[in-house]
Amino acid sequence: MMTDPIADMLTRIRNAVRVERPHVDLPFSNLKKNIAEVMKREGYIWDWEIIESQPVNQIRILLKYGPNGERVIRHIKRVSKPGRRVYSGAENLKPVLNGLGISILSTSEGLLSDREAKRLNHGGEVICEIW
Image (cartoon, rainbow, N blue to C red):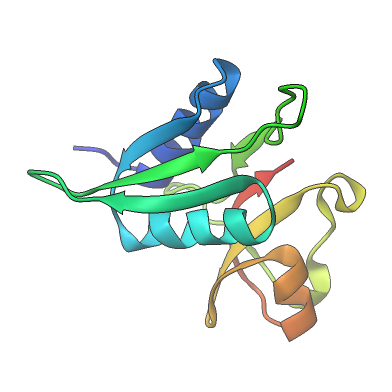
């Protein structure tokens, strides 16, 4: 039994980027789909799709690389963990790497990047940081 499926998702993405895979497949959940949607909106991945399979559906994340093969995702880190939850109000959100990266937050409006959360004046649980 897996205790932290989000950390597993981030680790699979980190490992796939390191070996320059074009995509990574993960067991599907709505939270993973929403994280992938935020990453797509912010330009860290090309797209995501749901693959019907048995016994559980898969989500395929199409990873993004630069024109010369440079990595778009250089660092991806879980912030709030099951043993230590991290929350932040909208006024306390600090830019990640001086605005070059993002934080993904779970808010009352759903999952948002730190830029979107600050614009909408919503705080929440800080899921992860990407740059």
